[in-house]
Image (cartoon, rainbow, N blue to C red; front, side):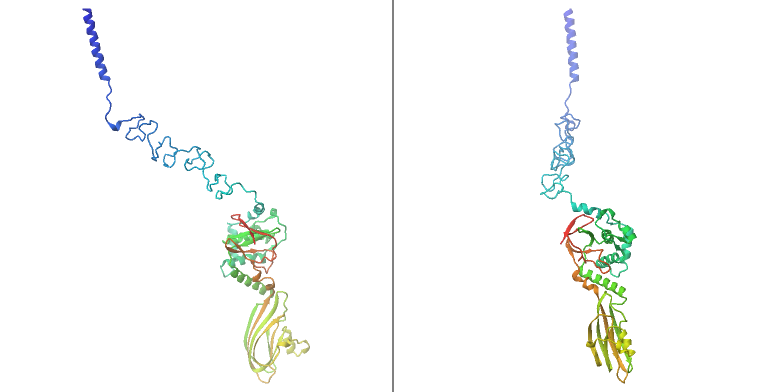
Length: 437
């Protein structure tokens, strides 16, 4: 009886256990959209790496998951071994975080290559002795100063022409005429600023050259400083030599006229009624040339209805001596004397004083005289300052001229006959320099 009960209990337990086990058995899903093979939480349908639970997305489709891709948005790069922000594929130095580019292919990174576009060299050049010498001077050159700009334009507005050549000449002539150049050895410790030089109206050749360079730059004309062993000069770039000489020559003639007090060319056209025993004089007053005029020429054309006597005289005093009968003090140039003149055209080639022509009516009839004279004074500056002395330096495909602030009131742009020794021109902007031929 007991055995039967025990078997019954065991059978019940077996049934209960079998029922419990059948209730806990997991049913495998058949929905493919929910299958997650690697168990990373991203279904296989959206997992770019369904068998790699550490990756599930590949934004740039380069085959490397975003979690391990150093450049998840760049299909060309996946690693940055040296951590410099440049991918190994594009990094010329993938193991060096300080370099990534080698422009000239010389094996030296651009960051330490002093010549990144030149494969033949890369090391830092030795200190440039000339650049070190020039540095204090080019640092004084001013480029953007409103006061200097107004000053420069105030000078060039006085001239009719707006050409570069006219402006170069105007600024240069202002410095020559209105500033005193004080002789001084080359010394960068006493340099003035351009505005200090304008205020003082004086300075060394270095100060005046720095001023010229700054004035030119302030109106858009590129310039350089030029160094010799003894001095510093300015250089104006990109000028037309023929046009420059034309404006310079006019300035020099104007300076002579201002000093001498007479125009260099004086036409004299008149019709006279000349009674018997009367005379007329055409020419200058009692004035001698004082070193700024070499000589004078007279082109003349005379027509008269009565014979006249022509004298060429050295000064006006001879006219008064002849008029007063003071023949002892009457002097004339016999080689040009003409009697019985009714028509005459010619040239008096050289008079070394400001003289002229006397026409005397020695007849008994009144003469009607038509005269056409042109008196031309020839300045002395042509002996020294002339176009053949204008020196141009061909730099960068353009002509440049030196501006020497020491030559005085008859200097002109491009006159550098007194400058000796090697000349080096340096651009104050780029600091590049060349040796002038």
